[in-house]
Image (tube, rainbow, N blue to C red; front, side):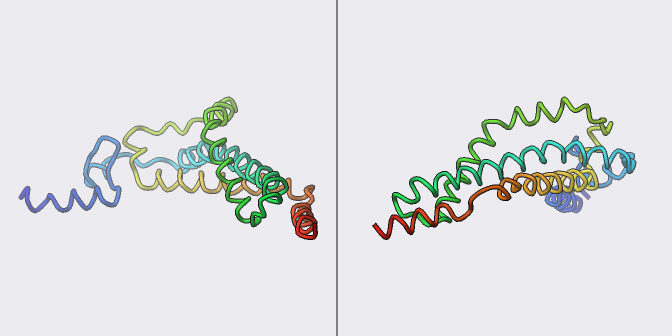
Length: 167
């Protein structure tokens, strides 16, 4: 019987159907499912810090990309997309360095805890709720971070590049 059950456990692990304690699918089914309120709180707890990351990521990328495009991009004749890619590198590095600060600010907001057990955290529905919360949070943050485009001179770098070519 052990040989017959081994593939089922392996496939359960492959698809992530395990509780946090490493139980198989049958044991995970014995876990009390979380309430809708717990799932919403879990999603919100993961969404809020991601709003901060999204704002910071897009804001830094746009500002750094514009600064690079208007300076060394003009001097070296870089394509705007190259400057944007370098701006993304700057943004990713700054996000990595300041991740703890964003999480600390989000934790100070006093969001209600979901009250999930370790076993519940391993349930698929909890993982899905957390992933969806984080995705919605980062998407909203990125849109907020793009708001700086409303006040930027988006043609400045192109004018400077054209001026450099004419010289």
